[in-house]
Length: 378
Image (cartoon, rainbow, N blue to C red; front, top):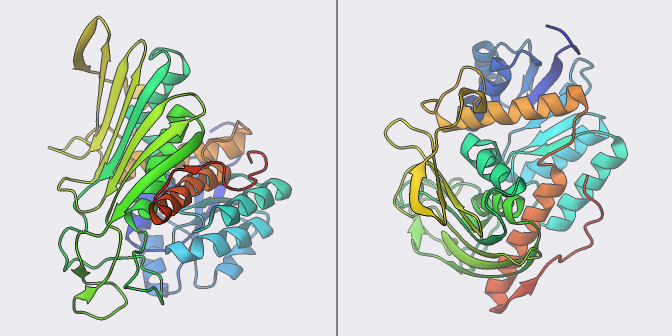
């Protein structure tokens, strides 16, 4: 292999998502060197280190951050830890990939982006679906003018993950007020969706949203075994206006019947329209369809083999397919000093839109963006 030596990687968090998405990406890419896995439960870290070939195991992230063989840190841990762990990695001079959301408040995410820029380190948010081959092709059609002027963009992220009230709900903050509507699907799912739509349509200028609780009682992880009465938002719809003049419609739900990941992106322009549907059905991870004014019946588009990471096909499980792509992009950006994409700044812009939708629901009005002084992109 020619070029720079492989990038030393340390992963914090040895849970299911690390095993199904993050770690297969590093193990499959020769330019990534999986140095270490860190977890507070050593048995979890040791099992995944053996499975994916990591050379070292840590139980204290601070010790791992002192490892000179690690140049990039992957934060794959519960939501409330993303920001402090990412800031610690930046302070240690490490490039950092963080799962989403980076922070509950967009101002904190913008702060992290500024600190990374000042430290001269690269960042990436774990917006998995930017790395769908179908979505990337759709975005190219927008960028190169194939779809013309963009009029409408519809984004949906919905599956029935939490339709069953006995399936434990995750990521409810300790001390949350169960009697007050707690943003949930709009945070966990909406952050992905709002990023995808912004990537395609440009900056948001105004949003309005409606949030609702449909399943009033459910099991909540960390709050006992029985059903809890909890006002958690499990479905949101929103309208959006963009600086480009485009209009947007968005929906997030984790009680809408359907399979993972449940993402659909529809873009309508003056020269054509495209639909990327990321729903794993019949062993296929995604589909892409395209239409033009003179051929309005949508037709399937087959992407070339080069659109997929080596060793993957449409039959590869979607977490591994998309994260292999994400890992390759981030490692190459660092080693080859190429332009950044999907950074902490982008994560902050997504969180800003999430915060605006929540505010619009609570105040029953349109909310204009930007809401805070974002500074310049990192």
